[in-house]
Length: 295
Image (cartoon, rainbow, N blue to C red; front, side):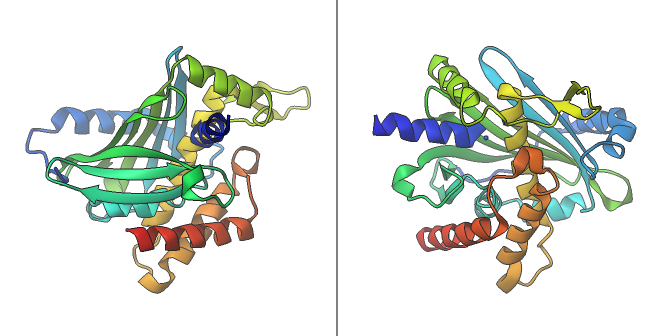
């Protein structure tokens, strides 16, 4: 029973060979991302997010997927250098409110990130759920970057977790990025999600507007798509907060990242507000110190 309870909390959190440089041509991948940038047009600049960003999600009987497309004020070379190592990704992932720890390991065959996922409050690692992501730089050239994190298994019959970052340079020294967060699930996972959405998550919403209330206020998507939209946004904001501190002195870098991530989430309180700033900062400083000691 204790194991089932722990898995349910982790489910709620999740859904609430070293690096190699590819030498194959990247024309198709780069071209497709440039085409997406062109097709989004004004949607990047006229949206409810108050930043150059577009968010989409999809749901099928067996999987969920969230996609964020964003225009950022960093050259592609800067982003590639900042995110080229697995330890860099642990610096990103620890900002997420549900990440309790991230450790990077490399052996002769692959590089892995062991990410402990848990509650939005302080928690021992024994009570969190470890998910092992394989880490791979699929392509890294002057014109295209693709980094993949894949995990075969998660709690309660979930599987095939995929975090993928793609990026291309665009005009003005900026970069157009595409972040994908997706996973598959079985019967146990669907039942756990239904339980969560009927109880603790009954008032949770995502970002996609589905209509308007009689008062004229927008209505937003809920359910499983709402969950994946919230987590995709949290991961994107973690990447953005990390990139925003590259020029900051190392001694204050963590503090600035934590403040930046929390401040960004507070732009969307209906979707992302979970804990107070003080509670988040105290918890994350403690988790980061634990992570650094174990790494």
